[in-house]
Each structure stands twice: as C-alpha cells, then as structure tokens.
Amino acid sequence: MASTPMDLDVPDGSSPANGTPSTSLHITRTLGGGLPSTSAVTEVIANFRPTKLFKREDIKDGRPQPYILSLDYDDPGELLMTSESDETIQIYKVREGRHDKQLLSKKYGVKLAKFTHNSSSIIYASTKQNDAIRYLTTHDNAFIRYFEGHTAPVTCLAMHPGNDDFISCSKDNTIRLWNAGTKNETGVLYLNTPHLAAWDPSGQVFAVGSPRSGSILLYDHRNFDKTPVAEFDIVEACASIDPRYTLQGWTKLEFANDGRSILLGTKGEGHFLLDSFNGSLKAYLHKSEGGSNRLAAGEEYTMNGGGAHGANIEGSGDCCFSQDGRYVLGGAKKGVAVWDTLGNTSEKILEPAYVLEDERPAAVVAMNPRFNFFATADQDLVFWLPDPHA
Image (tube, rainbow, N blue to C red; front, top):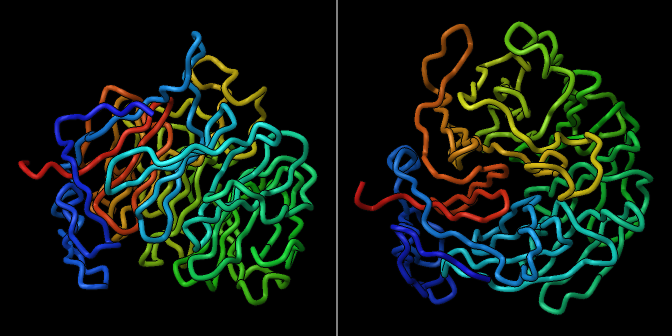
C-alpha cells in the first residue's frame, strides 16, 4: 500500500496501548488510562488539512484504481476500515498513519463493512452469491457465521452503540434486527423502501429512513414490534427547500452525539438537518459545488465500479457529524465543506462556515469517534488532521 506524506505528515509510533500521547493526532481530550486530552472541536475544525494520501500499490497491469465504498472506525478510533469495489477490505492504523492489512472477499463481494465492538471482528454485506451478511474475524480472515434472511441487496448496516445488536436494511422492504451472537434475526419489520437506519446515542431508539414514503420512523428498540414512537414527514418539513430530494436520493441517516439532531444526507445540492424530537427542519445544508455522483441507498446499479466517474458506485454517505454534534462535514468535488449548525440561516438555508480544500473528490466521509481526525475517499484514501501551525 503506497502512502504519500503530505505537508503535515509526521512519523509517530505512539499508541494508547503503551500510554503515550500522539503528537500527530494532537490528542488532548481525556480518554482514560492516563492519556492526555484534546482541543475542543471548535478550536480546530477550520484548520484540518489533508495529511496523508493512500493509493493501492497492488493495482497493476493497467487496471483502474478501485472505488472505496465505505469507511468505518473501531470503537477506540485506532483502526480505519474500507470496503472497496474490487471486493477487498483494507484496514489502516490511524495513529501510525499506515496500512495494516488486506482481506479478500472475492467469492461473496463486500460493501458496508462495519466493526463490531471487538476491533478484530467485522460484519459486511455481500454483493454476490446471495444477500447474506457475513461476520468475520480479521486476525485470521475466518468467518464466524452468516446472517441469512434478506432476499435482495442490503442497503445499510447500523451497529448498536453499546452492544453487538445491529440493524440491516434491504431492498426486499424489510428491516432486520440481529445480535452478533446468534445467526437468527431477533426481529423483522416490513416497511416500504426502508433503505437507511441509525441508532440514537443511547441505543434505546433507532430511526428508519424510507425515501419512497418520504418519512423517517423512530422505534423504541425494546418495543420495535409496536407502532413507531414518532413519524417525521420529510415532504412536509423540507419540500419548500428542496422538493426533488424529499422522496429520493437519500444517502445517509445519522443522529448527533447530543441526540438533538438527525442528519439526512442526500445526493442533491444539500443535506437536511432535522430536529430529532419533532422532525422539523433546522437547516438545509447547502452544497455550493452541487450534488454527489454516488448512488443513493437503494438505487439501482449495474455493478460497483462500472460507471463513468463513479456514477454506478455505492457509498456509505458523504456527510457526517463532528464528535460534539455541532458541525457537519460534507464531501465536495474538491475537498470538504463544514457547516456550523449553530450558524445563522437565511430562510433555513445554511451555507458552509468553512471549506477545507483538497484536489481530490470526497465521495465518502467519516469522522473519527475519539480523535480530531477524519478521512475522505473516492478512489484514493485521505487522512485529515488539524494543522498545528494554523
């Protein structure tokens, strides 16, 4: 795996495993175990810079670079995982800024790879053979079990924040609830196009996004088989701002860590920031560079990697909250836009507070849960860190 040091790249072999702070990650927030702790997000958000670029050096013989379909971190924020269009999983060590290992899934394909709460165990959706979800240990590349039940492609996987329960969404119009400890589902919901799901920070409530019905449904996890505890009409809340993407083109569903907001990402010219208690529109996060080329959740595709400029490529979303829930980071054709959700809006429209420049597109974006660090990807993977000299 070839990596290109960029202007902020500094070698650093420290790790929480040995209790030493990382200078390259600028950790100053208390993480336990005597580690020092961090600058508030507000102090560094405008100063992130692309720090290291990774290209797949194993791609030879004139083959094109694969597309990165998803990004995910383990709980401690030490590892970053990608699933890629050439049916591989790549794992990187965040603090050391290096590639760690490659895992192959040529028989079943791979997308939507997620860490469980054990950093050496992952789940991912299949793209070939069948629509099973696969549970794998990364240290020996061995399957623990398959989660079978979906009869059409999986569109979203969402891990519970506190245990090994998880949710899968599918184009078969079902939501399935699972626990990693057993192969059988713990529950099924039959809904119209339930293509996205997300847990609230407490793990007591989960949300389901249904683009065709233009609604987000909130369920009590303990009583998921009962009627939803809330139903948010996205058409009613958002049609005055962006009517085209109230019923299609949804790419991401995420709760802020403070539980007060829901981010509904779209492939259009903006994202919807919603009040998580009543579903009202807090702000429309306008993208100055226009929409995304990636497929929305549940959209048809020919094959991953088969379209011009990524037009037939799935993704795990090009937007996410910062750890404090105040900021939203959104991928752009060149770099990353940052919206301050506490900023002043004009007619509910919020323009980016900052634009973090890079020459590469950011089709997939993921913020580290522990450190002031985020990653973006399209065909290349980019690590971003705050510039200590800004």
